[in-house]
Length: 391
Image 1 (tube, one colour):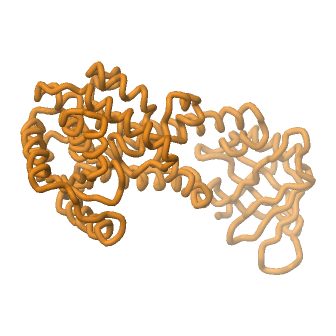
Image 2: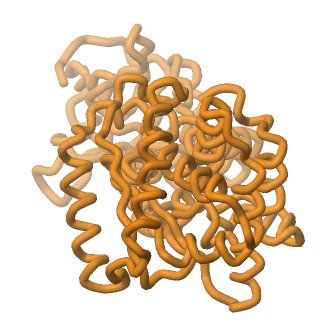
C-alpha cells in the first residue's frame, strides 16, 4: 500500500473497515489500470482533498463472481492487513474492473460459464485417464531402474519366509523329478540374455524352488526367485502333457522377473497415488483404495501379457513348442472352474479359472487381473501375439 495524489475520475461509494475500529469509513473507490492489473484507490470522505490510499494489484484479494445472471448483493474486497471494503454497486464495480484491465481467472470463468466448466472438467478427465493409462506405467518403468536388486531379494526372502510359515509346504516331488525340472530350468535360463525385456542390464540370479500346499500354481518373486508347486507338475502329468508345458510356465515366470513386474507394481501404485494427490488434493484419500485396486487389476493384465510375450520369445529361441503351455493353461483353468476356486496371486496357469470365454464383457475385462484365458491360449498356440511387437 502507498499514498499518492490522483484525480478521482469515476468513483463508486464504499465502506472501508480498516481493522482499527468496528466502525466503517465512507470512501469513494476508484480503479486504475497498471501493467500488473488494476490498482485500487480509496478516497476517504472524512478527509476531502487528501491523497487517496492506493493498493497495488497484488495487495488485494479480488472477489470472484459466481453467477453472471444473479450477481451478489454486495462485493466484499479483502484488503489483507488493512481490513476489507464493501461496495453495494455490484454492476458498476464489475464494469469498472473490466475497464481497468481485469481478466477473470480460470476458476471464475468455470463458476460463471458452464461451457468453460464442462471443458475444464473434460480436459481433467482426459488428463487423468492418460496419466493412469500411459503416464503411470511409463513413470514406474523408468523409476524401477533405480530400485536396487538387493532390495528386491530381501523383499522376496521375507515374502517366501512368511509363505513357508503359512500356505506353502515342502515339496513332495521325488528328488529325481525335481532334478529333471531343474535341469530344464537351467537350460532355459541360458536364453534370458538373448530374450528381449525392458531392462537389458538387469541380471538377477534366477532360482527355482518347489513347494506344495497351493494347488496348481507357479509364481515369481522379485529378484529372481521362482516357485512351482507340486500341483502344477501333477496337472501336466494328469493331462499327459510333455515337460515343455512346465518349461513354458517357467518361461512365463522368468518374464515376470526380467520385466520386474512385482517391483513395478509397487512403484506404479505409488506413482498413481502421488499423481492423484497432486491432482485431487484431499479427495485422493477417498479414492486411493479404489485407485490401488484398479492399478492392481489393469496393470496386472499388462504384466501378464508381457510375461506371455517373454515366454513365447524364450521358447522360440530354445526351439521349444508353446502349444503344451497353452494346453496346460486351459486345463488348469477348466479344473479351476470345476472346483470353483479363486485365482492365485501370479501364475501362468493357476488363477486363470476366473477368465472364461464368456467373460469378454468390457466390465469383466476391467475387473479381471488376467487377460482372457482362451485368448492367451490361442496366442500361445500360434506362438505370436499382436501386442508382442515391442517390450
